[in-house]
Image (cartoon, rainbow, N blue to C red; front, side, top):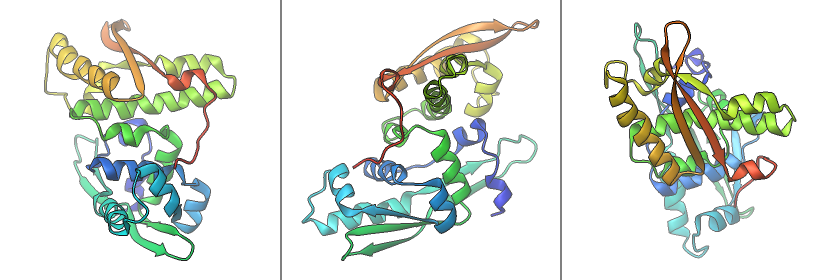
Length: 255
């Protein structure tokens, strides 16, 4: 895989990357992500995770060594990024395994995860653009449009939190209430040729997705359709909120 294929780190690209994991793997991946230091990952490609953190966060009995190893090894098999090219004229589809190797240190009581060299730039970008709770949320969604829309809006929410913490309230307000053209939403959900009427698109893509996001995630979404520009093209005005609005945001290690 060419490295430049993993350097298009805009929101549209990241929102379309897919991972299919079970709940336990998503939970462990979320824990692992909370321990990632982008600077260190770029240097070593390795993330060390204390066994105690896995036991506490995953609610695993420390005496059940086999169960613990099964959870970790399943993550290695399932942590595969499925990447589709958004370019309609040049379609490509790539799968990339995120974790090359797992090393258990029984004396130090830690597990080392070695990430694939090709995927490290992508991992660093995701770490910077997503709030830490995103992976556990993703495990609960059933509808494909919910997953894409959630990931897209979660990146706006991370920008909002960062801007708010910096005291840039004008930018924070823009990120918390993004105005996104329906053409763009169709592009990332791959519905350019489906649900042709606005009412059908509203019901099948927007409303069903937002209902599931509000029910199953830490984000709360409101939206309204608006006409934009001289051509009166439709756009969607979103409002994104969460319990994290009420407290200073900081990246933290889980477990």
